[in-house]
Length: 301
Image (cartoon, rainbow, N blue to C red; front, side, top):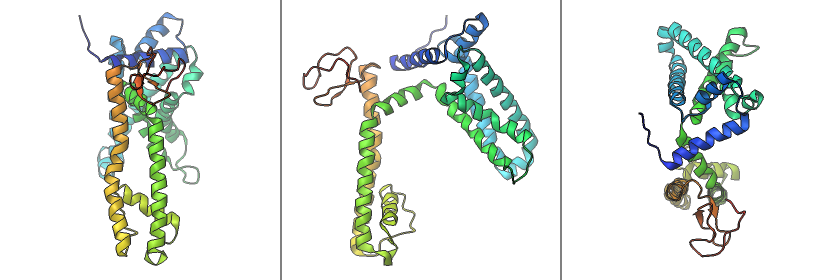
């Protein structure tokens, strides 16, 4: 007997994904369609896990082929092999796409969903490159090959940890939005200050240009195309560089803290106290664990 171990959060995320797929696209009625649905959309079955693992391997291999094919020296030597592999992956993903449409009750809903569109983009360029003449006035066929990189977006459907990260990001969205707003205000203010301090003579020709400099400085990128020349300007730039180190760590800390709270409190810990703002309460909690105030019955973060 085969046993598998998984954390409650991972199992819950996988079950949620499967139930959402069944709710959105509908379970089929036929016997073979039910079996195909269980393999293609339900990762908690034995064959479903194998299907997902093989599909992830095929996606990574196809992306590797696209990347290697873009290197001229490698493409010259192995171009024919890459063409064969590309058509093999295209046929494989085409069959997968058709099976997904065939094993759901509402195929149009899947075709217009995010991953349905990604599936189509993963196979469409190869067929377009085959049928569309290589006429530059119409389309550059080589540009269509770049769309094949969209296959890597399909990985999010087969790795449950993506679901956990997505839930943490959604739960932290307000804090992240506030943080981004603070950063935007800071770079605009500092850009305006630098425009006044340095002026057009030192390359700060306008507030937008100075704001661009503030963004590259605060993110510690520093392209060097615009640099302060005065002592006061260099002092301000030094402060912004040091500030940038701390600012870059803030979003990571927000998401990490949210993931830690959900791992400890469980996947249902999504409620926030309306009085003190404490997060991470269980779905059936009635009072805030920090201030003791009653939690609204219909309040969810």
